[in-house]
Each structure stands twice: as structure tokens, then as C-alpha cells.
Length: 392
Image 1: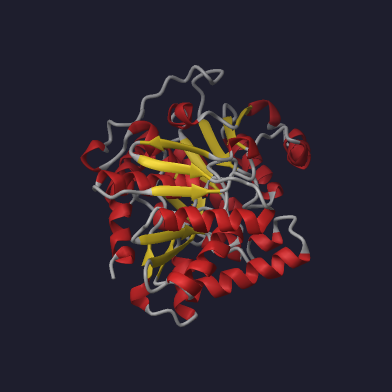
Image 2: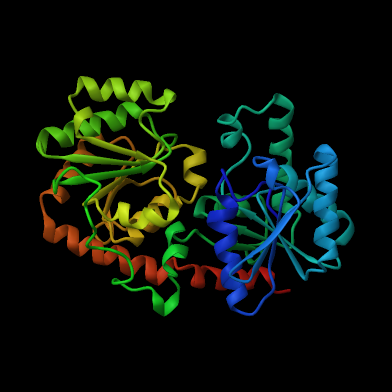
């Protein structure tokens, strides 16, 4: 497996590639992740193992050409049967381009895409140069049609791939499982309603009050909508406590959000934890009564497959969400949570208030959430889908 970056701070390799690799290793396969740690250069030229998976951070010498050539050399020296590149852009995209040109008859080349990278996707959000944006868009277009198989993390990406004329048998849908599952060894028969903390120690909260969780990076939606929802729920449930996990409310780019909440008198109801250590995350998420997941209806959001949403359901948290893209694969209306069209502020407020005031309904949806993740989204089951992509 090849990544365009290391395990952190970006999460694709940690939250997607590595769980799949670990499951493949448990099935008896040998797997190595090759990555350039350009976000954390001090870790370059490092090799280690996690649960039988070899992880290799290549040298960063020689700039883009040098790093790409290092990836190519080390991947080929490993003599793989399959090379699975994660993301079609940057270093992994360059490596797959070279391998396709010169080695496609000797090694099976698989591309994984878990976001839309080009126009309408990450090109619109990241501060890339104009040259980089055009190059990444070209890499994405080229990569989708120049591989033996394509794994996609969302139904929207699957639809885009098929619309480009890629044969249906070459497109394999492999969504994301919960990122927290590794901390609890969630796999197959080990995953059950009792394997995660449904009755949590609420010591992090000020009291046992109705608690709404937002687990987010704050880029999927307009913060003014979120503030209006918080204000509406707080008005109906005055004892409400709001738990924020992920991007901190007090980061500089969240100043607008703070102002909106202060006007609505909601700020004092918020407990802001920011980024949480992975091993503590399941217990913290399970302290909430209801989760919320907002998504503007954009191409980027329709194509992404949110691990954070899977995490909330994996601890048995019923979620009220906007039905955009992959969200409805996880939040099944009336079974694992409640869905509203994107932008329906009044409907979202009504659903959140309803669940916060109805413990029996929350418990029913909680049981449904756990069963849904166990049935469809354990990494063991998702890794099994890869065998279709890897077989000739």
C-alpha cells in the first residue's frame, strides 16, 4: 500500500489504509505501507510494525522526484503481487503513474479514492498553487481510468467512476469503518453491543444533563446554521449541555461561531474538548445522549465517507444528520438515527429535542446503530471486499 503522506496529521492512512492492512494481515497476507512523512520530516527513513503490518516512512531526500523515485524503488524491491495506492494525487499518484507505465503487466495496480480531490473537491479548500490544482485534477482524471481495479469509499465516487466508463466489475465499493474500532479490537464476533461503553463515566461533564455531541472539523457546513440549531435546541431544553470534540471552538477561525453562540446565550452550555487522544475517544463520545452531523450539499461532502459519523454510531450514539451523500449509508432513518434534508434547521432542531426528551427512543436507536455497524461496517467485513479488487 502506498500513501501520499504519513499517518498524521491527515488521517487517510491511519483511519482507512492501516485498518484494512491489519485485517488483511490477520487473513494471512503480507502487507507493507510505504509513505513519505513530509508533514513530519523527523520521522523519515523509519520502519516499524503494528499488528503484523510493516510500515515504512521513506527518505525525503531529492524533493518531489527523489521522494517519488524512493517510493518506486522500495515498493518494487518488496516484490508485491498487488500495489494499492491511496489517493490518486501527489506522491502516490506519481508512483502509480510510473508503475502503470512500466510494470502493469507484472503487478496488479489498484487505486483507492476516498474524497474528490480536483475541481469542486479539495482543490477548492486547500491553499494549493494554480499549477498544483491543475496537476492534481489531471492526476485524479488519469488515475481513475488507469488501474486494474478502483476501490471507492462512497456511493457518489462509485457513480462518478461508472460515469467515466470504468467497467462495473473494476469498481469496488469499500466504505469506512469506525476509526475507534482499533482501540477496542472490534472485529467480527468480537464486536457486540457490550464491546463499547454504552454506560459511560460522565466525569468530564459538569453534571448529568441532556447532552448533545458535535464531533467535527467544522468545514462540512456553515457555522451560522449550527449556531441556529444549538440556539433552538437550547431554548427547548434549557438544561442542555453541548459537548464539542474535534476542531476546537476556540481556534482563531472559529471566532464567528463564538460570537453567534454568545448572542444566543448558548456559549455557557458548551464543553469544548478539542482534539482528543484516540484511546480516550470512545469513552468521551459515549458520554453524549445524541449526536449531530451536518453536511452542506456539495460535491466534496457527497463524495466523502465520514469516519467520525461511524465512530459515533459505533459507541451506540443515535445521530441526527443531514442526508447528504454517504451519510444515509450510516444513519438509517428511524433505525440508527434521524435524517433531514440539508438546510432544514427547524426539522433538525425538532428531531434533536425529540430524542433528548425521549430516553426509550434513544435506546432503541442506540441498539440499531450498534447492530448496523456490526452488520455492515466492521473492518473485517470491509477488508473482505478488497479481495475482489485484488483478484485477477
